[in-house]
Length: 528
Image (cartoon, rainbow, N blue to C red; front, side):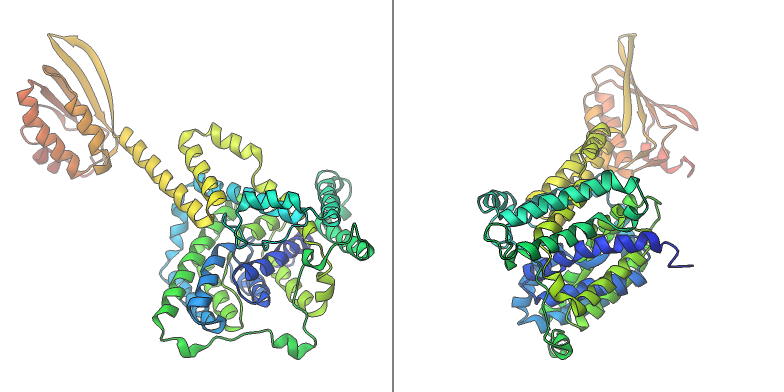
């Protein structure tokens, strides 16, 4: 397989992913209470190592906002960052074990409505979280996606505060950058191939750097350094190497280390599997990622990241969707973006630190909008309440709590919907005309009837009036739970007292007032 055959698509996409990943790596590290460089390490390892090992062609891995709260709490509880790194390494080992045990199958059991809700919810939260950065209000770090923020504000109060502290220079270049991105996406890419090779985000970032350079001495339009990217700048190569941290394996016997490791492995694996499901849905070529291989790749990445001082890694939907939206075709875009991160932090950290965060916010606003298009809401509404309700619950949970809570709530509602539909679909009932003074009622049982259906069937049987002729049709039924058989057995006694005659129709024939349902269904052919 020629990994470079899609380079004309993957290289431009990798540049966009690089600009999306850079502020998120730094912001998530800041939100996690970890050294800023640890976020960059995770981004580099997630791109190069995980990208190379992964079975996903368009997924991109790196530090995840969903783990920031866990990391922040664990660093303090475990007695320092070096102790926490032990948990990251062990978490990676546990993920390898998950892969061996084929736990990747879990990802296939999340309803489509929840996955679509996750994508849309993340799109909305990206938009809401980037609005303050767009206006040059950067009190809360990039990558803090929780509703209750690090700075004590919430998502909406932060937007209100931002409107009271607008930075003119940052806002102007953000608007210019957003205009470039829209013009590029809607007009220029259709005009010539050069506009497909040179991506709009790169042009927007270059214009942002030039704007900063030419206005930095302006009192009105100048952008202060706290509104710029902040990559650590080492004095020389030895000080660059000094930014790496290493795990303190002396604490490996501490039970809290293992509890944290298992928590990291579980949450990181779940986020990864959900992201895999989502990116496979977004993939224009509809390729299917081998989930167990993905767990192996993520586990390896976390072992390496933990060994050299990086944050935990997951596959991340923000970077993955940016990759897909920018035309990435193969895993080379993820790998190349990792090399861009590595090379840039070594060679051009000062240039990176001239990039206004408001320009990168404009890039992320476009990513968020493409994930949360209004047409998605319309299509889910048209799909019916069974799809729309879990979809909306997932979105609201993500926006007002966080990613995992949103997915969990959406999944719970999805399960309730399934149980309710199972309750409804256990049988079909229609009442025929009265004859000879008796009601004629036909109850046709569904193909599969389980204990979930007990309530519905009990309700219908209890409501049958006296002097009824009940026809129970089980010809289509292939599985009948023993709980249901026992209900019918109990009902046969009540039927005598209410003068209800029962006719049982099966593929074996017709039985009038069967004496034993249990005996009858035990004798049924297995095919029935």
